[in-house]
Image (cartoon, rainbow, N blue to C red; front, side, top):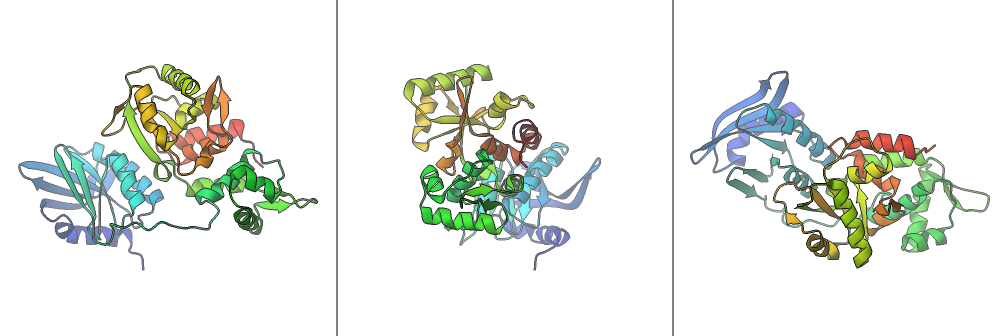
Length: 352
């Protein structure tokens, strides 16, 4: 039975000494109030001669979407409390949840004994026994990497009809797999067959909604963050375009930099673009990038599946992912991604 949030807070408070073994806990304050905000728990700790307030946001579920919510909340609460460090606390945190926290400079703890704290000159990282091996998930749902190729093709051209053979060749996957996914689409009411037995989407809007609710850009892809000496983002994008043309490199802008060329709504400073993993170092050298230990203004994105490049569009000579991929990437992105995604959809994606 899943614990309630209050039960998780109580259990965390009671067991914090064991979970944070080796760290001196000076004070435990559940429901810590700061102005109009209430942090679930604040742990005042001492490490050597350093004292820090761990501001903990507690969730009952460690799935990525809940971790993202917790990260946004705890960073806000932590900013209101002096000498503090934000921490997400859940009964169990998975590998994706860990990646999310680390990428946003947030610590985590769970009841299994997983701990990650990184602030000032302190780094505490503990991995619970049994978590060292991550099993590869073989999912058969519609939104697995291979399946997503089919969905992307259908959604980029929602009015088109397809034979399974055409989809198989376009997506570069077996016709047997295409048959299985197409059957699932029909069973869920997302697609139908016309009089010629060709497949066509019947509810593209609903399909995109469900996909967006299950997809997260930050956890789905591998991100390589760098700093650039180029202060003009527009000029940086021109450099990316020119280098790709000169060296025959495949790339595609995404997130706010990509959306700014398609349906500008949110101004951007960071540039994200998909590349092939084997070409990351080429891009780093050609753009004169420097590694960013935390954050960075340029992110080279190694995609979860090469299908993200399908349907890429050229805007003023610059390659940008399809509007479908752009919407998905933005939808759950914390930095005003949802606003930009909805504006893009309103202006450029008039699905039924």
